[in-house]
Image (cartoon, rainbow, N blue to C red):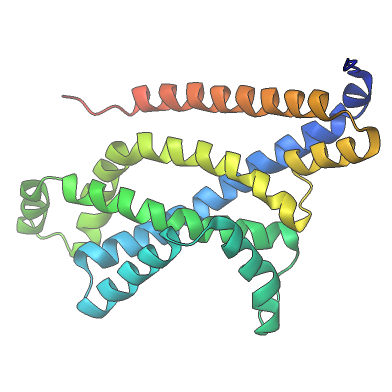
Length: 220
């Protein structure tokens, strides 16, 4: 009968906490970069010239139909062969996750842009605002409020996706669990603890995001 032994896990608990912090940091940076990519692609799809619409649509369709792990391998192993040298495995993964999230956020932002009432943008143009001013002062603030719940869900999904970084030896939470398991063979204990850490972190993130959503909720 299996005998539980939690001590090897908690003796290495600092390794798991460092991995948890790194995972949250990578998810946050990836979301920030992916949001910039998504905004640019969303405006290209909704208001750009025809060539820009085609490029943005191709990017979205390509990335959304390719597994994230394949993107990670291409960025980490493939780009250096093409002469594109990245700093390390952590930034390679962040770039992969940003490209991946950017494709999904493009659709989130596109829906938000299209949800902004045309009357508001036309009124802004009527008083002399340029297209850039309309985007900055009218479209973006309203779109952000509409897209905030989806942004929160995307962040949680990205945090869970950081577990794939262990495939290229990024020392995040899952990689820490693998190291402890290799050294101690406490398979059940280590993965139960790691699962609880993921669960607790996701619940904490969701709670903070709900508070943020209530704060920025649109007045009806």
